[in-house]
Image: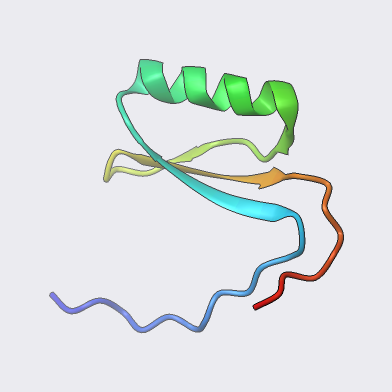
Length: 65
């Protein structure tokens, strides 16, 4: 089945989009470690086994690209 075309993704300065592919225990440890240092969104698990979240690094400068 071909992939559905998606519009180009846009990003905000200082925001990282994270995808974690790991078992639930490892994912929970990685999310906890990231949340201890950064503001993060709630992790969103998907049936594929990946978990997605956003992380705010606090940087406000525009990305160079």
